[in-house]
Amino acid sequence: MSTDEVPLGAREAQELLDGLPVVACLAGSMDYMKEVRDRCLAAGIPAMVVAPAPGRG
Image 1 (cartoon, helix red, strand yellow):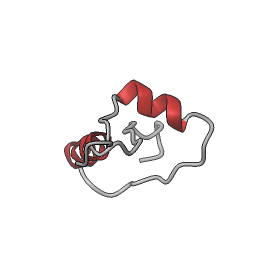
Image 2: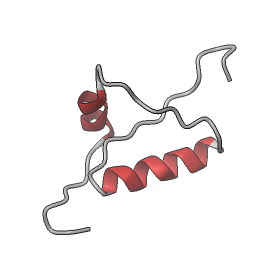
Image 3: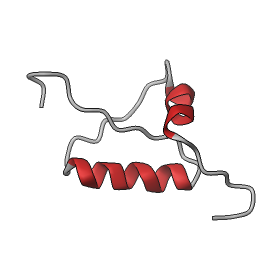
Image 4: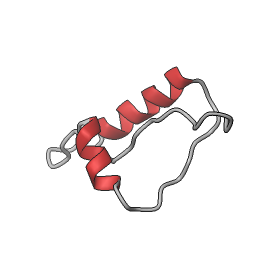
């Protein structure tokens, strides 16, 4: 991580993504998706993980 990159928190990422088009990642375990989210946040990249809607996954 460079000195100008600041880790994001989950709430801050959600606020940054609110109202924007997002890309769904539907393959992988929930643990893997959380790991990817945590790596993105640590690099300053907004990311979030949510469970699929009932009957949709």
